[in-house]
Image 1 (tube, helix red, strand yellow):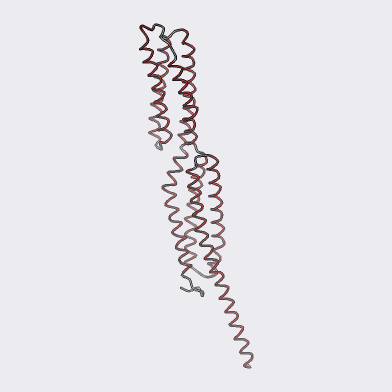
Image 2 (cartoon, rainbow, N blue to C red):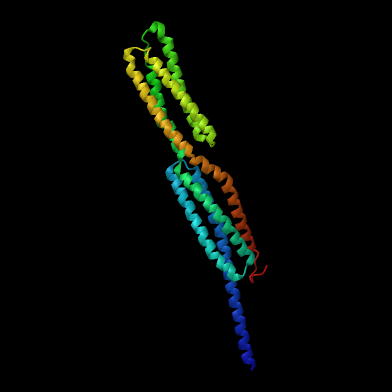
Length: 288
């Protein structure tokens, strides 16, 4: 074999080695980029999910849910692209860490799907709006109608009429207080107790109106009729509030976010940070 031929073979081998090294370096660089983007996209997904839970409008919840879902799709794309690169480089530890993240992310995503579904329902917020809006209006109308009635005999019944009217208004106001507590409550048994108390208060308010009917002037009967109609409206809205509150979507989504989701998110981030660290400590040749 001539010296020239040996030189050509040597140069070719060195060139092939150089190309292989450059290819490995490019793959390592891409692996590092993807691992960094995984952590960025996961942070975006978690943040958007939290915003969806905390949003105070349906539009806001839907927008943040969409952002969370888009970030989760980006995470899956990055992971799908990263795995064959790690396998091609024969990075066993990094592949293990990516698989570990994949398992944890699957759990996170399943839980987040439940949380985001609850978040867009906004049942507690809708109940709150009913309580502050139509329920408040009906309660005020009830108060105004009751306070406008006049006793049939001013000398004998004035204070009795005033006391009955004040009692009826007070029972409705107490129901309003219970509505607010019901909306914020997470415990079913506690809500049941509140609903039982509301039923007792409603019966007391209707009983007061019946007693007033025998004590007021005929001219005041239309006002009592208006008070009864207002109480009917109020209790109808109350039934809607209780049904929405029972669904408890905002309370449940918040509780899941603060507890289970927080733990799963932390585990996912641990895997991603370990993966990034492992890739950052790799040398050009793939050795540590």
